[in-house]
Length: 395
Image (cartoon, rainbow, N blue to C red; front, side, top):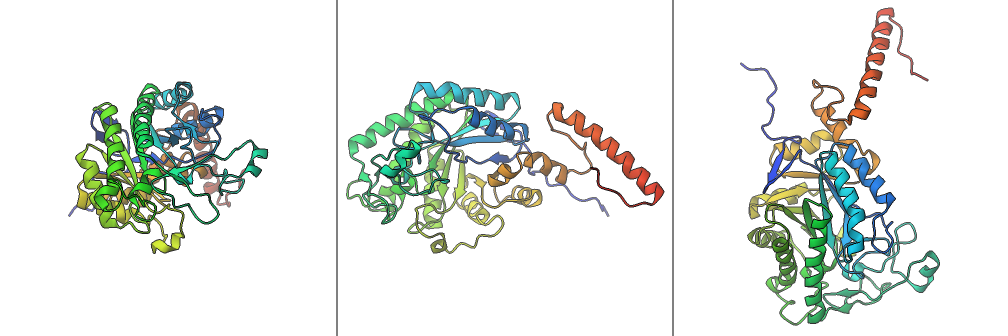
């Protein structure tokens, strides 16, 4: 009888091939807004913020939600790709990621009615004239209908067919700029209460034309945008779509229908989150435990027969590994955990492969010194054990 522990053929550190691109492992750093750009242009903050992750061992790193139009950011500090001047600073970031053997990715979106908002550390509400003291000026928001985020927010302006057509061009040109910036994966943001999600939801989409009413009509514009991006992005590179698999007025069954349609137009991975329309999270009736959104990713993977990415409170290496090894999802996205520890992927590798080289995968500029320190610590531990004295903490 073989007593050796069986190793899953696919695990957290298995590569994944998507079209002609090979991801070195299944760990993805989620796009996380930092509200620190000016005129949509990335700066040294964004480079330092994302470079930490590039050194930390993740297979793929997403740049935060990047607006396709000037009125499409959540705040005045959001990144953008509506102008050529925004390309080069992002290219600097993408080039560094590639030099670190990680895959650079970017998420494009439009905030719709959730735009023109305060930066979170100021208040996170709708911008008003009072925010001009911080250098932020409010602007008119747009949406699928005229339903505001809540009673404290101004009503958005329903999109005209002409503006919807102009946005098609904006999505196309932003996609082209993302390619010029050197990104290998592009994700369409169709979740968290942003514009395309606002078209999907019957709570926010109050249109009476061909883009409102039935589920198929409400999906029409988001699917048109996804197809424009897929047709514009090179065919040898993958496209992801992030969706809210569950929300008020939107069911998991709806998400399965949407995911099947996304797969049919060539979307490679469905990134599975929940919520975001701005109402109470408790209304979703989703228990927020570790990996609480994984079952939704698993269900969509099975029912829509599409690759998925799991997100949400995936805090430790064993949980992340089990998600992949048990076939619940194909990729695991880490967000706030990476903010706390940019080396999360490297530490996960050590936890899952304790028999391997201790600092395998670490940048050589770090690994040589850490290995040297470990040899010194091993000698100290050995001497203390031999002398039968308790270990003392180094000062």
